[in-house]
Length: 349
Image (cartoon, rainbow, N blue to C red; front, side):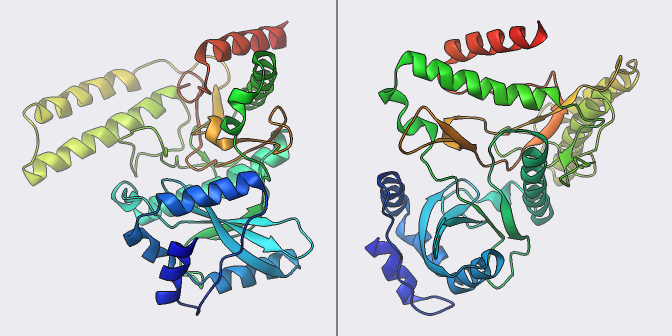
């Protein structure tokens, strides 16, 4: 951790800071990967944070003294820190600090980023309240990127174990099958909950607001066409209108492609047909999808890699029509498909 510590000591908002050292083997491994993967120019971004303010807030919300902090990992949109708490258990702080060369602000506007953040907080609360899927509890969140810490952040329960891939190759095929059966059971719980509209969850009771943007899937969907949508036809039309707006902007700027004008006209005709479709039969079939339901976000016990302990990172999750089922693939596709079919069949018997 010497490289990170040195850059923090060069310039920091809250004086010098010494990183704590993780003790668990899986935490040490993640911590070392973090240090190895961060380019020198990105390390300086860490110096913009007021980590003392973050520790102070952790002390306030938990009622316990925060005695240390160290970086744990990074994703495309966030950086994760472990907050060491007096008497345990430790907490996790996830900050909207981007340490990759990818710049999310080129993909999402400030309003879209804020909406995604708040929808994730609400979705975590909803899933905790309405399912048995183990997800972290959020104790505090601040959506203002100009707050005392210097970044949008949430302080939450720590899912204290490595992701599922950590021990996947060490367990037997039968143990893998057992794990996948439990994971498909989580999927089944989500599929069994139906919502009256398509969009994103905005409170723990499941109220649906405008759809936030996926972290993973490419989409032209943009305001003011983000819903919420009352039917599949409205959902498809929202994507068509957003794409049409994008092409019209290209035409106005003069950087459109050869067939852009044709595409705008084609989308107009498509919209006429879509909005002329009959209403959905029966109750609307909208359900919640985790945006990145994969091994990297499914965590297992450090002592027993066959025991699932949590599903994290619900950023970008959305309530979509059931037919728009693009998000589930764990690792062994053939095994997953077979287990999914068996679980679904048994639930219908």
